[in-house]
Image (cartoon, rainbow, N blue to C red; front, side):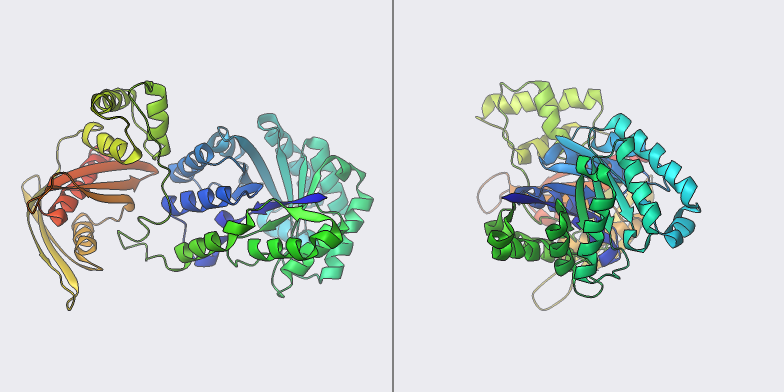
Length: 469
């Protein structure tokens, strides 16, 4: 029985579908979920520039066990930069995207066919220099000149590509046409015997699954899908097709179908009900966080590896401080989990002079009124006041702080827990803010949990301000 490979494009397609970039937290949750479902490959969008995309790729690479395929836009030519972001994945792959139709070559790359052919060869060779697995994606393949498409695919395989994807980008083909298109290319390009062939049909006419099925029948090794509807076949539909027609076509998929429905609903909720980017607490606490446990016998290298998986990029000096604090805690406890390690980082790493100080705050909240926060901060003797209206007192408080500083930072994580017991129990709050791809954490303790949360936010904010200065 032939196992059809499933390549998931959710991380690439859903940002465009939603109209806004995915947050670091969303990217990580999507990748973890797809990895649990046993997708054969998870495809990453091209690096847009800056440190945030690179750090997100590095964190995902350290987390998932599936093949991690990083897209490289041939027009950008940033092969080396992309490779650096995924090189530590268990199964890294570079995927070169190149337009092959006349209109797309002219519009996106300003190249004629001969020049594009040379560019494909050169860029595939560059990818192959770094990576054993290289994919060549023929964008808008169904509108390409047949002779040039055959040349492009043969040239890419000759230059080192071992995977080829054919895209019906404009969605112009019916299922029988797409099947004949795939079969014809396999017959005309003998080099395809040395490579895996994937199909990426469009759902412009609502026929993506039928086109994918036709491609599989014609000899394709895999299908590109998304977990939620995004203009391509969905994981659930492809899995249902394999279950229904698998015996007749002698095919199967390796997805964990028993978990598929629940996981897809979780991702759909994550992507469709996200708060606006201006809300500090928009996507915090969604999904599962990997719970790693460490003990006193773990060396500094293992501890810092977990710290990096939590999203922190610390200096050698701060790493040493974190490990020293970890050892003190670990000698008193049987194990140290990720929550304790987060708190250790927040209280020991990057301790800086305070730029912002809390003067006072007033919070109004209840079940019949909208939560408001009025906060007064001091910055170098200057009194700054902000007023926020939010979905709960903490959301309102964070919005008031953002109004004062005039900037929105992505809230990577927010945790609250008790430190002591009883009616006058102390509460501890942990806030993790992300700036330029790096995570900064702050810790606050108070009998007032809202006050602890404000102090934790200000603590993380002071670290960001110090670094930026």
